[in-house]
Image 1 (tube, rainbow, N blue to C red):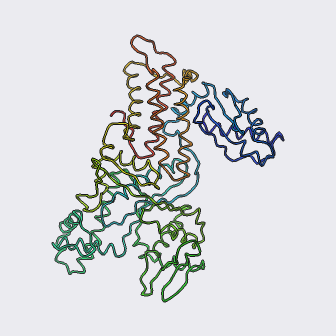
Image 2: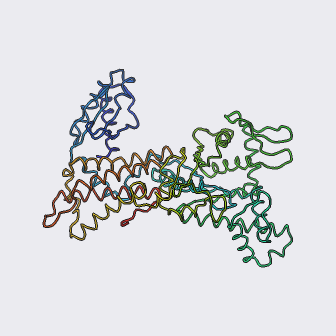
Length: 553
């Protein structure tokens, strides 16, 4: 019985008590069951009796006894104890618990997937760095977290569109073009321009790819560097994202909002909602009505459209394209954007607490030999995505960046993340996977296997270590659902580390295969089912994080 099935069983027990007139409550839509930290408290525990006691008008232990009596009748339930003020501690017999191994192996890549977010349409925007240079280390964090989150959301039933917002309009693009033009003509970069080897490389590529570009009139030359330089920079960003295993369904152009008239239409739509006003020759959005610290200008008195106006048009574009929830993943220097973006949603008539979510990612540092690394050879004053990949590899970067809450500042220690030690979290998990695969290889060498599903004897998985392994594997669907609902894929990574630890203990204490002249037994076969179940879960979890599950290391 899986935790999800047990949750449904508890729910059914409550429903039966209600139908019998023993309880007068609304049957909960979902019942939480959790693995107790202390295994003396059973295989699973639920606090459903405490939740129902007040509406039922009964003491929690009285409610617990009504539910427990029905749970004790279920096949495979060895005992149900009532603890403390009314917790239900449920223990399965070995056969019922061991059956999970067969369930996982037969489900394969589908194990863990659920419908916690079924039907929810989410637009997930992440990275979205200005296309004026390589992706820096802050963007690398969002590439890892955002892509992992997209995978998690899809695995929990959501309809997800991933999106990169190209800020390809405005002053920064003009500075980028002028920097390319200066480099191509052998001049220093303009004040506040862009520097670094990548500027020289792009300028050189443009000169070689467009013969005669330096003979064009200055303004025509500048426009060529703007248009063609942007194409090359975006292509470079797309290459980096692809090599990092990060996929975007849509590359959305800010410039297209201006060129299509979407910005002007958005302003009129917001005016119709009653939140746009004119003052001092400018056009404003009254965002203070919804928690912003000040109202925001949409069009300045000189007629120039603001970035904020494009932000408003962009949000409306997402909604028009079918997004029910728009998730923005922004850098640590964008805290001020949270309230203003939520205010846009509210001004558009949406629920600012439901239709829009803004996540802020904190800073990332890199260490080598105990010293902070600050510079990139190619980009000058920033660490780029290519630097990170060169130093520690895609797997280590993705896993380590995704394993911490985005609310926390993190440090990537190059020495640790390139070591084959338990201090290296991605190595720790991947090594567990290779150990699992190694058992399967050794079994093949011996000419034995786990046998058919009909031959599997789950009741033989009865030791403490086997029970711990089964309990850990059973948690995967719940962890995955939690990661999707909270938009925090780090729960998957931390879970995998727990599973790896449980497996290493199982490996050290249980014999999976016969030694020497020993015969292959049903216990060996049952354990091979358990090992394959563990391998399946770890591989599924690593896939959700965009990390490989190697068979050898």
